[in-house]
Length: 216
Image 1 (tube, rainbow, N blue to C red):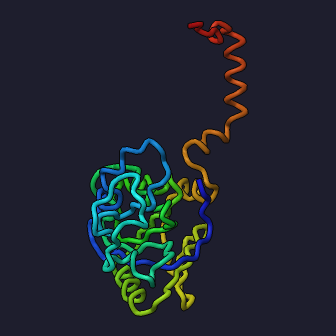
Image 2 (image 1 turned 30 degrees about the vertical axis):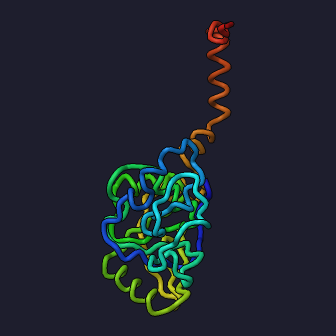
Image 3 (image 1 turned 90 degrees about the vertical axis):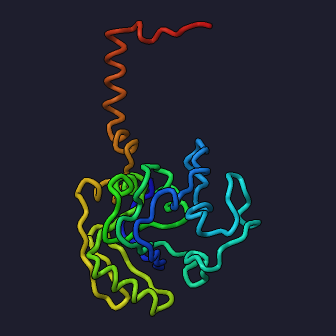
């Protein structure tokens, strides 16, 4: 998993409340057994005027010019500004996969759905809860200033605005530790690889029959 320490990025505003995971990653794209390739279909039903299906060439499709991520001023955005209850609906982990693979590293909102919130941390995306008044002010500033960027400093737990002012945020210490070090669940387990190998060797010495192989 990609580590997250300090990230500076262009902000894109998603000015909708209760954005659910089916809107973030529509159900027809859940057929894939891989964990990659979801970025082109992020917000698919909003980004395109035609219906998307797995395996389509995005360059051959009809983009919706009114959708925020299709507007040139937000090209390359890596910080998503959202409204309350972002990521509600089903628990599909494909939603944070798509956001991360599109290029978003952080999401700022007044509130998130619990399972989506947890899945973001497990996939290298930092979801930040801010007071609704601060989020509303950020929406106004993003609209007023093209090229609006924010710096998200996870070790210091602050968001630095273009004028140098800072917005503090909370994050659970263990989640912060995992993100700063780039540890997903597998990475956390592999920290103990030497102990795991030692245990397996000791167990095999005591129970050698466990190493027997079935011959077809």
